[in-house]
Image (cartoon, rainbow, N blue to C red):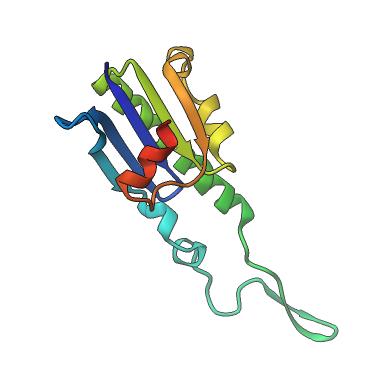
Length: 145
């Protein structure tokens, strides 16, 4: 029986195959791991403003506006979530597990689940609303019980 564990956040993606060792103990084998570089860059690295931009002369002197781009942050987050969904679909298509598990932060878990096909949702045994990307394999195993 093939089982897959996927852990993801906006910056990292890891997929593990669930195995039983010769000693009859559970184990995870890393089958895919990568980082989303877009998640690690700052807005200021994506958007350049020239000297004095967003400023106007006002009655009280020089007035500067905020150059924060919330829509760019939202668009980046949307793109990263879509990348996670596509990566999940590729892993599931390649591995064809009987069941699989998904761990992702609470903030993005519903959006990931909404992007899955009905067949993928049916084989999803457990959703874990937690960021497990920085945990070692043995710590992740505890969440599969």
